[in-house]
Amino acid sequence: MSGNKAILSILQKVWDERLRSSQVMIVLCGSYIGMMETEVLGYNAPLYGRRTGSVLLQTLDLQSSALFYPSYSPEEQFLAWAVVGGMPYYLTTFSDQQKLLSNIRIHILDAHSGSLYSEPRLLLMEELREPRNYFSLLRAIAQGNTRLNEIAQASGVGSPSIVARYLDILQQMRLITRRVPATESQPEKSKRGIYQINDHFLRFWFRYVHPNQGSLELGLADSVLTQRVQPDLDHFAAIAFEEAAREFIAAKAREGKLPFLPERVGSWWSRIGELDVLAISSSERSALVGECKWSVNPVGMNILEDLKDRAAKMARESGIEHIHYALFSRRGFTKALKDHAAKNDIGLFRVDDLVQPKL
Image (spheres, rainbow, N blue to C red):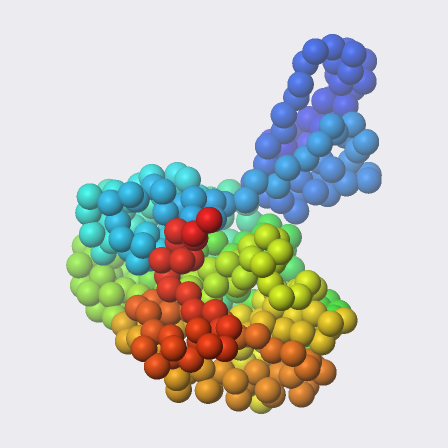
């Protein structure tokens, strides 16, 4: 449509005069969601009122993505999803006949033959004007700058008001999300908003590839892998582990397996604490709180006690009276915690449960 601005008006005329009563079905696809919603589906668009239906295609979830790697362990399946996300094409580039780090080295970090090395750059340059500014913003977010002022300072793009306009466009494209605590009943008015890159692979690319392009172009992929990616990969994966845990709880809610009907599922943070997972019902004054530990050590009673302390702070701030607990672990739980959880109806979930949920 950028090549021929009249294409939608032409389609409208052809549809109204010739195709409306025929057996022809027209399917329009677009990757720029903001443009599709305004110029194709919007009230002032030529094709407004003529669609039979519309579908927003989502990436594959963790369970579906794991099926691409049957030879991997659940932990390896999760890590692959944390790196490339749920885009089928990206998933097919990795092979479960190779170690995960080898896949990253060959397909992402190799500047000369890596099939995914230039993928984000090519995609975004097609969609964006002034791509340099957007790249700076995405890189800043990927490196852990999540609040507006932090992003503005780290990116060097401009003042917070200027950066906010760029971030709005990235949100329209569904490349980033502005998250607020699940306790917020009016999220659009919340002053606690933080920004996060939606797609796992974009998050990985802007964290490890974009900042190291000079080294990668020099053929130093092995050094970038061992000195930049490998030491930080667990920290990177921990964010995806929290996302998977929140979706796991949301799925439980859809199945009617929570002890209350939640109004929102997300996380919580304030000046007095934070929670990785929070499903909340203000009307029932009930909540489920969760802690995620992407650690090689089993989770013990100390983690549960700390979670209870932070949950109590959230409850006082939000008027919650009934709290349920869930813990998510990479490598399991101590015997003491398992015994305590069995007696007190506390949910304990390993990465295996998130990757291959039991029916």
